[in-house]
Every structure is written in C-alpha cells, then in structure tokens.
Length: 216
Image (cartoon, rainbow, N blue to C red; front, side, top):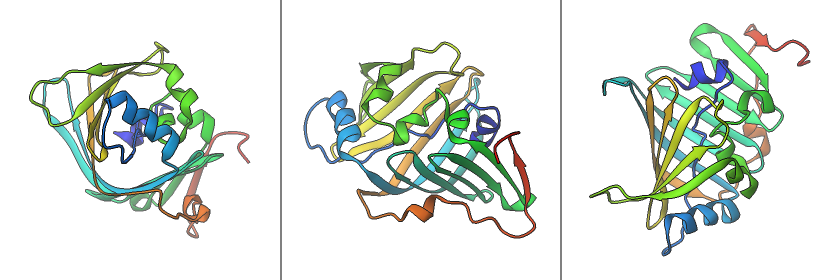
C-alpha cells in the first residue's frame, strides 16, 4: 500500500508518518502533539501495519522497523511479508525492493509533497496544513486527534493519531480510495543517537535504477 502511494506521489506514512513518542505525562492530545513537534528530534521503533478496504476486509498486513531524524530524514524497513526499504535523506527518497533487484529514486519534495509523511520529520509549520481537532472515541484507551488536510487534492481524507500517557502509539489514515491504514508502534526509543549515513541508500551492484528525469 505504501509502495503504491509512494510511486504515485502520495506518500502516506507513515508516515509518515506521523510518529512520536513524546513523554508528556499530562495534558490533552493537542499538548502531546505540540510536545512531539518541539521535543522529539529522533526516534526508532518497530511497527505493525494493517490495511483495510472499504468493506472492512484486511487486505494487507506487514511489519518492520522505522527510524527518523529531523529534519527530513527517515527510513522504513519492511521485513514481513516481504522485504522492502523506504529511505529519505531530506533531498532524495529511495524505494528499494530486493526481490525485484530494483530501486526507485525520487526527489524528496516531489515524493513527500503535501502528505502525512511531512508529520514525520517536519516542524510546527507542517500542522498549518491541517485542521486539528480532538476526537472522542468511546471506550478507547487512547486520547485521539483528528487531522484533516486543508488541500483537497492531497489524496487522503483524514489522519487519526492516538496517544497514551507515554506518547503516540497508533496512527490511522483514510485515503480517497476508501482504504484505511493503521500503524501500531512498539519498542519505541525517543531521541536516540542516529548516524546520518543511516539515511543514505547504499546501492548494491547490479540493481536496476528507476529515477525521475533530471534527478541526476
């Protein structure tokens, strides 16, 4: 699902996307979101991703690990059901598929664009692109925020972000095709030391390269 959205210029993370582990112990979900933007400089975590279609059927399940380093650097390493790597250094974004022996390279701005991926590594100005409201979900153990893009051409309808006392734990987003994607994060490490070269793609010999015209 994420791969398809990346290749069509509609990267939705995780994203993007969309991720934090702020340690605020009190306050509203909005307070926690503010804490995420101002206090989180890096993170590493495991994730489980579930995609559900408009009929409520699970159409894809995957898992792996992710890391991010502000500004503009992140990586998603899928291990199940198949290997895939999505890496960005703030200037370029790589999608590497070992099974196909292929890597797709895009300019960072063009690949990320007006999408939830901006939430992963952007500053407070990112949230000016959304309407942000608290969301009351009955019997939920989380506090929820509802983010709706102001750009009607963004390709998705909304993002729901769930927090507990230790920070963000769940991100759900709905796209214009009726699909709903949920990301649950585990083993979260906040503000860890990450090397910048972790966000550079080391291209194996013989890999087919697909890139936008004029990128190089």
